[in-house]
Amino acid sequence: MEKTIIQRLELKFRDAFRCLGIADSFPVVLVPSSKNIFGDYQVNGAMAAAKNLGRNPREVAAEVVSFVSHDAAIAKLEIAGPGFINITLADTFISSALRLDNILRVPRERKLTVVVDYSSPNLAKEMHVGHLRSTIIGDVLVRLHEFLGNKVIRRNHVGDWGTQFGMLLAYFMELQQTGQEISWELKNLEEFYRKAKIRFDQDEAFATTARKFVTKLQAKDSTMMQLWRQFVQISLSHCQEVYERLQIKLEPNDAVGESFYNNSLPGVVMELTQRGIAVDDGGTKCIFFTPEELEAHVTTPFIIQKQDGGYLYATTDLAAVYDRIHNLNADLLLYVIDSRQSLHIRQLFATVRRAGWVKGSTAMVHVAFGTMLGNDNKPFKTRSGDTIKLTSLIDAAVAKAKKIVHQRHPDWSSERSDALAEILGIAAIKYADLSKNRIGDYVFNLDQMLAFEGNTAPYLLYAYVRIQSLFSKHGLAMQSHGTQEITLDSTVERALALHLLRFADMLLQTAKENFPHYICNYLYELAVMFMHFYETCPIMHGDAAIRDSRLGLAALVAQVLATGFSLLGIVITDSM
Ligand code: ARG
Image (cartoon, rainbow, N blue to C red; front, side):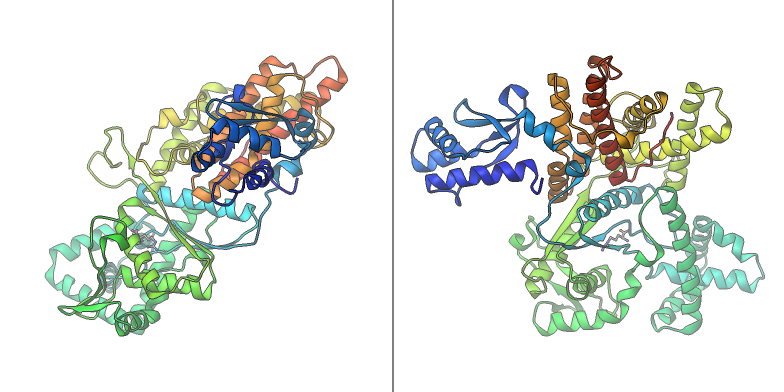
């Protein structure tokens, strides 16, 4: 299959539409049918075309159908309702296309360079729940684009520069001078930060030192720089531990933080002011916009330099975007950032457009997401109102998973239970997040995400384990199945097979809209369909041909599930 099913059908219909003489002004609009009585796919474009031609839509649909040239993939075309065209695929096409390499192959027009900005915590603080969504949504987009064969550059735009470092450095010096145990303090970063903050707030002399240190740091004072570097290293290694535990594809080299752009900041401000894009407003340099430019009812300016000459978050992001477009040659820039920063991103993109930095084909997208909420529907916090550390959240999910594993398998050794609990707990957190439309907020609920029923990680992993154990119980190797012709005797088998063939189209749609929940929904449907198949079509059938065909289908489902899990960054297990 050098094209996906949708691509192939769309092309066919585009040709047919062209015969009406309107092909290029009216899209075919081909989508999977909502119900199987409407066939497998549905073309909706004939209605708009008819309206434009001032003709009867059913007549236009009939004409389009008459223009569709023969295709072995199509068994039947029907006109329905006001002018829909329903397409039913040929069973022979479905069964002959059903091979793993075919299912997993995603045709691509050209290789893109995709820069994904994600995770990006502010350093010198421990990662907290607020960092989870960007980290795991970004990770899926990275995995997806790699799977699609694109060149992916990961950018962990960490906040590794700024006033908070003065405070930390001052506290560090103080401890060192009083001969206190420093390595221990640093291992507990949060604690260190908290204590430094208390000193800063309570002791004026300390605060003055801290401010002085910021200035020294900005002037690249060597002692300060050396200490700062240590701090960044320690913070990053903490992040790295979290990434590894969560199986996030971020490596230390991907942490190209704010400080990386320090030397480019004066140039950015100079270019924008010289070209009149940024203006002086009472000493600050800012960019003013129209509401149209920001696609919002606001015109808030983008401040790129403070009165005292200091640079800001905005300046750094401008330098970063320039680097990504011009040095990394990005075709697509994804910013996986909380929707509360949407104004900042609009200002950033508007400035880039105005400066003409975008090349013809470069696309910039804010992959925005909502907030994770606690049971009280408020942003997730501890009872005392503190932010929850990411590691505590993971520990809580794993502990809960451990209880569940213990209930199901009281006889398992604790190593075995622990290993599964770690997989399940983390899979549950990730899946619960990824399976929701990222735009909205959602309530973090451990019971729900660890349930074995419904659209959850345990349910999906369990479907996979079922297939695995079916093979292992009968001493069969999964890899040797699914290569022979599969016969589709029942509607259940046919529906399952067709769903498998939709994998590539689903991935392309996910990449187009940056919605990981499309992958989750697909996998959930696949698992539900498989369970239905498993219950209605005995796999270990007496007839060897039927048995082989069904084993083949089951093997394909397991392998597509496994591929889906790997795209979601979810680790699979063989027993649970
Ligand atoms: N460090 C920022 C924060 O914690 C997020 C950075 C997102 N990336 C960016 N290019 N602005 O809010």
